[in-house]
Image 1 (tube, one colour):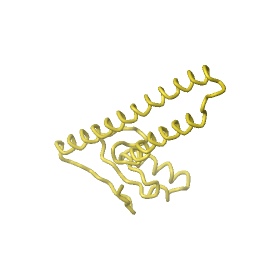
Image 2 (image 1 turned 30 degrees about the vertical axis):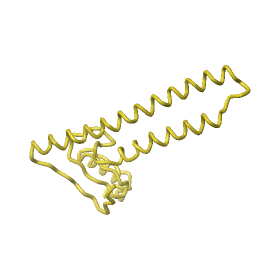
Image 3 (image 1 turned 45 degrees about the vertical axis):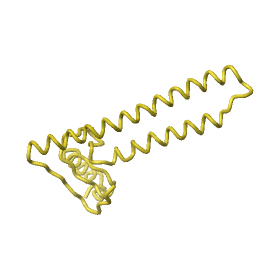
Image 4 (image 1 turned 90 degrees about the horizontal axis):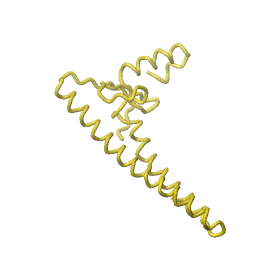
Length: 133
Protein backbone atom coordinates (compact mmCIF):
# COMPACT_ATOMS: atom_id res chain seq x y z
CA UNK A 1 0.00 0.00 0.00
CA UNK A 2 1.18 3.49 -0.77
CA UNK A 3 2.30 5.42 2.32
CA UNK A 4 0.93 8.95 2.04
CA UNK A 5 2.19 11.55 4.48
CA UNK A 6 -0.43 14.26 4.02
CA UNK A 7 -4.16 14.58 3.51
CA UNK A 8 -5.12 13.75 -0.07
CA UNK A 9 -8.52 14.06 -1.78
CA UNK A 10 -9.27 12.33 -5.05
CA UNK A 11 -12.19 13.76 -7.00
CA UNK A 12 -13.21 12.38 -10.38
CA UNK A 13 -15.52 14.68 -12.32
CA UNK A 14 -15.95 12.79 -15.59
CA UNK A 15 -19.10 10.60 -15.28
CA UNK A 16 -17.62 7.80 -17.38
CA UNK A 17 -14.46 7.66 -15.29
CA UNK A 18 -16.58 7.70 -12.12
CA UNK A 19 -18.49 4.70 -13.43
CA UNK A 20 -15.27 2.85 -14.28
CA UNK A 21 -13.86 3.64 -10.83
CA UNK A 22 -17.02 2.48 -9.07
CA UNK A 23 -17.21 -0.73 -11.09
CA UNK A 24 -13.54 -1.55 -10.42
CA UNK A 25 -14.05 -0.99 -6.71
CA UNK A 26 -17.08 -3.29 -6.73
CA UNK A 27 -15.24 -6.03 -8.63
CA UNK A 28 -12.31 -5.94 -6.21
CA UNK A 29 -14.61 -5.90 -3.16
CA UNK A 30 -16.63 -8.76 -4.61
CA UNK A 31 -13.49 -10.85 -5.14
CA UNK A 32 -12.35 -10.13 -1.56
CA UNK A 33 -15.77 -11.03 -0.13
CA UNK A 34 -15.85 -14.25 -2.17
CA UNK A 35 -12.47 -15.27 -0.78
CA UNK A 36 -13.61 -14.42 2.74
CA UNK A 37 -16.76 -16.53 2.21
CA UNK A 38 -14.55 -19.50 1.29
CA UNK A 39 -12.56 -19.01 4.49
CA UNK A 40 -15.79 -18.74 6.48
CA UNK A 41 -17.05 -21.98 4.92
CA UNK A 42 -13.80 -23.75 5.83
CA UNK A 43 -14.15 -22.49 9.42
CA UNK A 44 -17.72 -23.85 9.54
CA UNK A 45 -16.56 -27.25 8.30
CA UNK A 46 -13.71 -27.24 10.82
CA UNK A 47 -16.08 -26.29 13.66
CA UNK A 48 -18.59 -29.02 12.74
CA UNK A 49 -15.80 -31.58 12.45
CA UNK A 50 -14.45 -30.44 15.81
CA UNK A 51 -17.86 -30.85 17.45
CA UNK A 52 -18.37 -34.29 15.92
CA UNK A 53 -14.87 -35.49 16.83
CA UNK A 54 -14.92 -34.17 20.37
CA UNK A 55 -18.27 -35.86 21.07
CA UNK A 56 -17.17 -39.25 19.67
CA UNK A 57 -13.59 -39.42 20.93
CA UNK A 58 -13.41 -37.52 24.17
CA UNK A 59 -9.99 -38.91 25.06
CA UNK A 60 -8.30 -38.65 21.64
CA UNK A 61 -9.60 -35.25 20.55
CA UNK A 62 -6.77 -32.93 19.41
CA UNK A 63 -7.85 -29.50 20.63
CA UNK A 64 -4.50 -27.88 19.81
CA UNK A 65 -4.79 -28.92 16.16
CA UNK A 66 -8.27 -27.38 15.98
CA UNK A 67 -7.07 -24.15 17.61
CA UNK A 68 -4.09 -23.92 15.25
CA UNK A 69 -6.24 -24.44 12.13
CA UNK A 70 -8.87 -21.99 13.38
CA UNK A 71 -6.17 -19.41 14.08
CA UNK A 72 -4.72 -19.84 10.56
CA UNK A 73 -8.15 -19.32 8.99
CA UNK A 74 -8.79 -16.27 11.16
CA UNK A 75 -5.44 -14.80 10.12
CA UNK A 76 -6.25 -15.46 6.45
CA UNK A 77 -9.59 -13.68 6.86
CA UNK A 78 -8.02 -10.62 8.47
CA UNK A 79 -5.19 -10.57 5.93
CA UNK A 80 -7.95 -9.70 3.45
CA UNK A 81 -10.16 -7.59 5.73
CA UNK A 82 -7.59 -5.20 7.23
CA UNK A 83 -6.22 -3.88 3.92
CA UNK A 84 -9.76 -3.75 2.54
CA UNK A 85 -10.89 -1.54 5.43
CA UNK A 86 -7.94 0.82 5.00
CA UNK A 87 -8.21 0.95 1.21
CA UNK A 88 -9.86 3.45 -1.08
CA UNK A 89 -12.44 0.83 -2.12
CA UNK A 90 -15.10 1.91 0.37
CA UNK A 91 -15.67 4.40 3.16
CA UNK A 92 -15.32 2.65 6.54
CA UNK A 93 -18.12 4.82 7.99
CA UNK A 94 -20.92 4.69 5.38
CA UNK A 95 -19.55 1.70 3.37
CA UNK A 96 -20.23 3.43 0.05
CA UNK A 97 -17.90 2.72 -2.83
CA UNK A 98 -19.21 5.23 -5.37
CA UNK A 99 -17.87 8.36 -3.66
CA UNK A 100 -14.81 10.57 -4.03
CA UNK A 101 -12.41 9.88 -1.19
CA UNK A 102 -10.09 11.70 1.21
CA UNK A 103 -7.06 10.07 2.82
CA UNK A 104 -6.41 10.63 6.53
CA UNK A 105 -2.63 10.34 7.07
CA UNK A 106 -3.00 10.10 10.86
CA UNK A 107 -5.34 7.12 10.81
CA UNK A 108 -4.02 5.85 7.45
CA UNK A 109 -7.56 5.30 6.14
CA UNK A 110 -9.60 6.60 3.20
CA UNK A 111 -13.01 8.16 3.92
CA UNK A 112 -15.62 9.57 1.56
CA UNK A 113 -15.47 13.36 1.57
CA UNK A 114 -18.79 13.73 3.43
CA UNK A 115 -17.85 11.35 6.27
CA UNK A 116 -14.37 12.85 6.53
CA UNK A 117 -15.83 16.31 7.04
CA UNK A 118 -18.32 15.07 9.66
CA UNK A 119 -15.56 13.25 11.55
CA UNK A 120 -13.27 16.27 11.27
CA UNK A 121 -15.91 18.62 12.70
CA UNK A 122 -16.65 16.14 15.51
CA UNK A 123 -12.97 15.90 16.42
CA UNK A 124 -12.59 19.68 16.42
CA UNK A 125 -15.52 19.91 18.87
CA UNK A 126 -13.95 17.18 21.04
CA UNK A 127 -10.63 18.97 21.04
CA UNK A 128 -8.70 16.46 18.93
CA UNK A 129 -8.39 18.19 15.53
CA UNK A 130 -4.96 16.59 14.96
CA UNK A 131 -6.67 13.26 14.12
CA UNK A 132 -8.30 14.82 11.05
CA UNK A 133 -6.02 17.40 9.43
